[in-house]
Length: 256
Image (cartoon, rainbow, N blue to C red):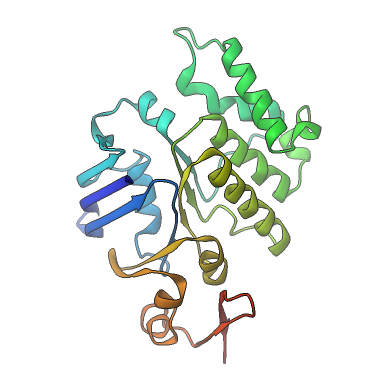
């Protein structure tokens, strides 16, 4: 069953179409890696699914039109982690994760017992209890990113959207964050759509890759089919060597 269906989606900024007549389906529980050069339309597509930018065409989640959902209902189904989330230095990790419960708050914005239970369970499940009382400004970049993902998880979403959410991290913290998402997907049955710059990591973690160029899909399929030297030279204007490591993963290596 398709969790996410995008049909004839077009996104226009001013007079410029950044996404044009795009059709895309994502299977329930799938991890879709969204790749492409800067300006290809990846972020715009994710932001439209999250309800942050206007679009033409239709977006449906499990057969329900996202466009007719209230902001609160949409946020109960879809969690979005932007490239540069706002992270207040003087807020504790527990308070920040609690912000993920806003779609469920009562009439006067008060948290209920269920909200506290979800925050506690999220911190426990992601092994973040030691950071509970720490201020976000005291945490490292990798630790803060784990807290950001925890906030998204506290929304209890069916669909998690990641927009280059590990791009600013070093290799070790990138891997930790991506393994966290992989655990979330497997154990919580969450569908993931992740825009990623690192093509090797995109191929390792994604079940399927979709490559965008100038707002259109130019390739879709397994990493081995999408990440070819010829296509990367054409789309990214890059000189690379594509190899397969002993585990079968596709590795993209820049060359001079």
